[in-house]
Amino acid sequence: MRRLMTVLGLSLLAGCASEPPRKYVVFFANSSVELDDAARNVIQQASELAQQNPSRVVQVEGYATAGNDLSADSLLAIKRAKLVAQQLQTDGVSGDRIRQTPRAPSNTEGSSVGSRRVEIELVSH
Image (cartoon, rainbow, N blue to C red; front, top):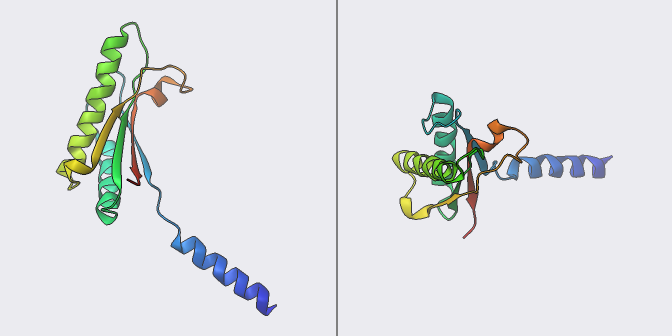
C-alpha cells in the first residue's frame, strides 16, 4: 500500500511539472487579415508563455485556403503570419525570437476554417 501511495504521489507531481502547451492557433475569417478579440487573446497567451521561456524561439506559421488564385492565397498566408508576429512584438516578445513561415495554400486540412489560421509554437533553438 505504501508503495502504491508513493507511485501515485510521484505521478501527481509529474503531472504538475509538465510543460504548458506550446502551440497556439489563431483563426481568421475568410479572406481576412484582421484580428478579432479571440485571436488577440490567443496571441496574448502565447506572448506570456514566450516571455516566461526566453530561451525558446517563437515559430509563426501562416496558412490560407487554396482558391482560384494561389499567389493571392500565398500572400494572404504571409500577411496573416506577419500580423500575428507584429502583435506578438506589441505584446512584448522580442522580434529576434520570432520566425515567420508561410505555408502553401491548401484545402487538405479537413475544412476551409482549418486552413484559415496561424499557428504559434514555442520551439527549442
